[in-house]
Image (cartoon, rainbow, N blue to C red; front, top):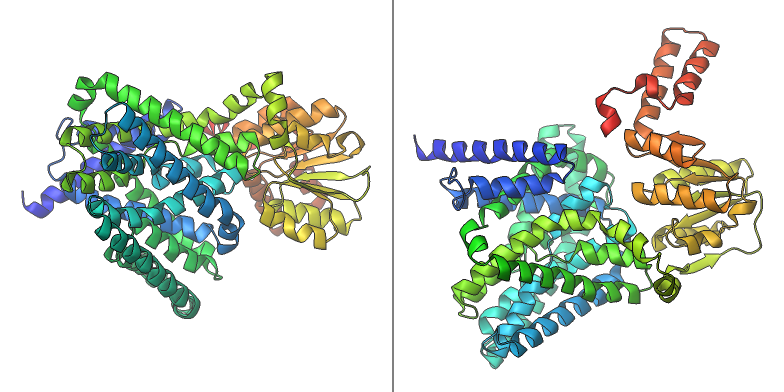
Length: 577
């Protein structure tokens, strides 16, 4: 078999194994990411050795990282980035600084680091978290646009920027004069890249994309997107910065033009395909023999790292005025060690800052924290609810749960409470106001509530499912509650708590999956709307009109379908989604 055929064989093995691992993880109700990592361990050179050339697979896996961050940039507009700029800059600096200092102190006190320089290096390695893993987890859960999702991604993007400086500084850690020069050179590179990106994004990229879009050629449009993503990622790599930040900035350039949604739809299949290669390649780095021989040490390190980083991140997010639940979710979401810590650790090994044994222990610890991330993140919301049941703790945390900003001129009555002011919530509010109904909006996005004051719309800034927030919403005097939140867990909690406050309240909720239709109905929601089914019903209405069915008959059919909660049009599989 020729070398080219060996590569194709390896690629087929990885993709096929990833599909099987993802399927098994899904059937076991686990994140597919966990399946990708485990099959990477199984088929890699340190497992059953089904892969001959793991290096080529890793090269392709870098495309997965680039496409993941490019797609994030397309969705993560400059307006959204500006909304969380404070925690992105100040919060990430605090997190990196405190983590590095804490690790340096602990490793020096217990003799784990031979020199203070080595302790600082280990702190820098452990301070980084995984943008790729967190983004994949948030995407699977549909939480990239939630408040905690935006906070985590903002901190992670700032960490990626810091990585470029770390890579430049590490080889010069033992030389004070070279260290200052390395830091200065890194900051200069960042400034040059930012200036280049602003100029490119303002003058060139929008014009090129518009011209390509006018050709109406899907192939040309996709090729242009790929070239832009990989080209700018290559520029950042040459500057010594991470490819992640380059791909992300390339996505931001697209986000501000008219073709952002079209670009995202074209890129998603590529993103998902190469992303699974990336996660499988991370699994290939795990050495089962090292894990077995150092099981106790690695387990202790994993516990120490994940618990320690969560303890550091939690008060930082709280200090920026976010609620306890949002802060806990954020802290349990970015408490792993990042995949680019592998790169930093390798530079440290080559610079004699760490031994090969420590390097292998770091690899094993990092891989395990990546695997635990989706599982631990799933427990964040139930853990927050459980902790808030303790009266003393709840009293201490109550100020964090209180609304950050309330704008209600007078006591409201006979009003409609709308939870969520995204694309769906804005339409609901617009319809209600056109019909003359008084509206109160509950939204946790600072950018979203800014125009509400100008429109003279009462609002509360905070988490809609928080009991303290709901106390300010005059639910007992309200006519109805419309829930248009992007988070399924918050939707269920809000439904339950709102009806506890006002049992007679009419609750209209949006279901994200078929399974939620029944759970929200059981909680007491009067109407549960599932967007995909509603789109299908509208298509059915137009089709029946085209077939000249009687209007009364069409209306009766649609009412019957909605009355039985879409049961007549659900298939068996959809009940589990």
